[in-house]
Length: 463
Image (cartoon, rainbow, N blue to C red):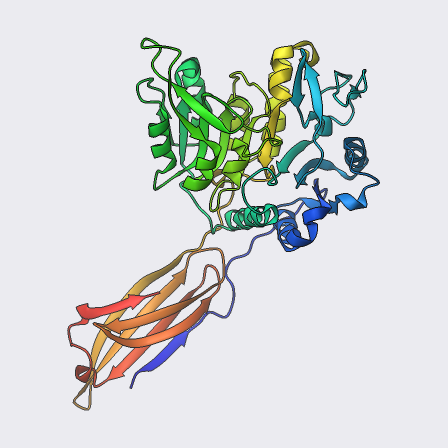
């Protein structure tokens, strides 16, 4: 017969406080066609970001007077009085087009710059003039899954599940690792990319050798068993693929393999965040768009930044500097835009930078922060001490095993605890242990020589 004594703590030893006297507002606009199916996920998301200091307002499109871009922008403008800092569009929220130098660009700038003047001079539903104060007042992210293979609501529900697990320390990748993969035509940006990422990551895997950068090598990096928190990719491509050049001295017209967007979903890379310097990677109206394929992969993928149009290489130092300070992706994006706009004079007078920044889009949740810059909430159950003792009581040996278990993490944990000797289970019990607390488990086995060897090295403890 085995006897068991468990000494449990009476108080929780860890707490955290969140407070903000003037909470920034996030407006979540959800298309009514999927609202009911994803409502539980939306409620969990709202609770998560409220815990991080935001206030949240979730509405569906049927609550608006109509579903036009003008009506949605009007709603955003009204919420500026409520300390609106950003919006998340979930589902098929109407897109807006803007003409830059005779090129039609898909842009969310219309929803972000709420006090500028937008003009459609010929009435073709494509804006062709943007004037006044053209800097964005808010950030914006999109979760558009209708153009990704799979059931739309299921993909979005799964995204919010990943989002919740990431915020609560249940979905973790090495937060010190990043990948910068730069193909031949971007070699002049190698140092800039490394400097950008090294502001956050102690381990930057930099791949730039023209003889190395190809589809096969890049795919092997995506399959890295440890993974990366951030992937920075610079190469040629379009909305549903990207490709790599062979070394130019061989033949600059040749290409060295292609990665298609569906491969991201198939591989499910161990990466949370992506910056795509790839043309049209975020063109979310197109089927199988790259940015969407990364964030709607099964296990990982939370945010991807890319352009809806052609993109040129630009400095990202300011963006990663803001992220390194613990700022959310949306806020870092805002500061990046402001810094680039200031450096390049009046944005509306520079077609090159209009085409870049009017097309740059956050696909995913802009309220997310990087692990390294936040107080990590982790799960960590440890067995910190084990002692065994043979007691001679009335000429009968009794085995005594005492185990100290510590919950070093940030959550209350419920788990199975087992003490065994060889193949024989001596103790099995379910324990619940608050964060930062410990418990002592003591098991005694009278006449232990009948069931277990006296050699205490055979004792196994598992939690």
